[in-house]
Image (cartoon, rainbow, N blue to C red; front, side):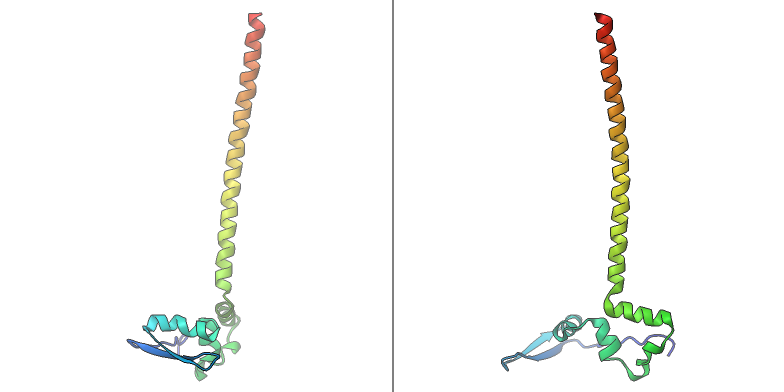
Length: 131
């Protein structure tokens, strides 16, 4: 197998039967896309844990022995590190934007203050000449 085998489930409609703590049973009928989100939620684990640990195919079960990049990618998937990394990148980008905006507004404020000082000084000189 050249690459990672991605488990797929194809059905037009599926039924999920659950048993509550009090023993009552419930059946939920969902489309396949809904089932892909319902099963991880009901089991209390992420989709990556289901694919890489719980329902891992025997041929793919040696992924912890892969090269470092492959293992890192699996761990990133399992622990959601990619979302964390993207969030950090967004925060850093927002910080850069705010810093740039702050610098620009400070420069504008300094220029306005310089103009105000010059206008005040010229107004004072004009009054001195008129006296």
